[in-house]
Image (cartoon, rainbow, N blue to C red; front, side, top):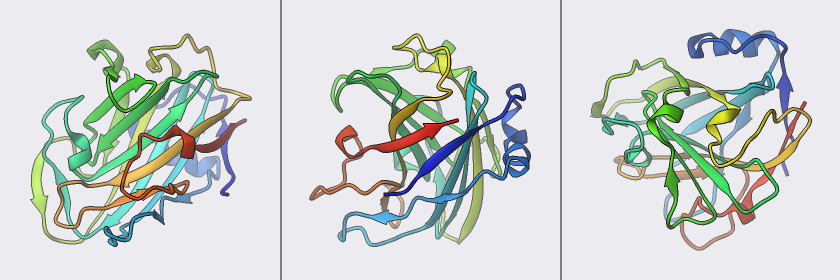
Length: 216
């Protein structure tokens, strides 16, 4: 199983657009989101993620190369998983709650919490507003473009955005998580994961297949 160590910086939380430069300076390692778990969906775009934290916030940087790209969802907490979408699911405390942070290629996010797929509680607007976003494709929605695209996405996520818990820091913790890349309604639907998922059909809402992230 992959080892994913999340490096720590003492710098203040940057703007999302500054995350690539920060992670370059930290020599943060890229990890491929490349587990093709379901043969019925054979398309495998090139996807990688790297991550760091400063105690107060997480910094996520995705890098994607795919044949088509779309950002149809017009607002936060919408159906972003149907677009070109990168996702981070995590279980930051020792209970059954996990969070799904899903973001399409222009930084439109969905954040929800719960113990299972059904009945999840979506984050209120004041929480969503605290998530910093930057995309190399800009921030405006657009219909699917049928041409190869390379794009990058950065998020800054304060730990207080894990709104069902009172977390002061993830520093020094090992939490269970997984990363995904999907595009349910693209011309080539796909469902990739970082840690493998052994199920007969696509399902990301399975914390039993989360792996470990170790936070410095």
